[in-house]
Image (cartoon, rainbow, N blue to C red; front, side):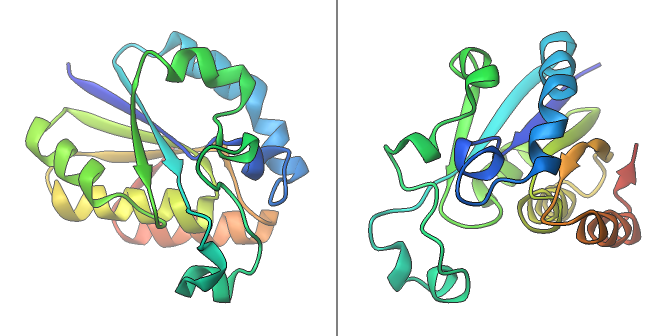
Length: 169
């Protein structure tokens, strides 16, 4: 069985940095264990912005410079960095990665599982892109290994993904 685990944006800025939250920090220990024990291919996404972030559409709507390439905030959290160094990492300048979705469609695994942050933005976008590019691949999201800005937005995002035939586990 060919299985993929997509670890979405587990970067310093989203866990302990400028956009971090206690919810994101709380999922780290269980996520590390899950990633270490995963039987399949692990892939990371990495939100990647440039110095001109504040001039972009996203920067104007979310005026918090974050995940600027090369900064400490851009790096994968220390608890997962050694694992990420051995895995494929998709840098993405926006919420979801078309390149990742195309790669999944090309490989056609038996299942794709996602975890990470932020449930309502990057997890949601990557899960729906994968579902759109690889329509017959089962896509699953591990609810307790995701975190969002608030518990309510986390629940809303999970419900939206479920509506798109993404299984919440």
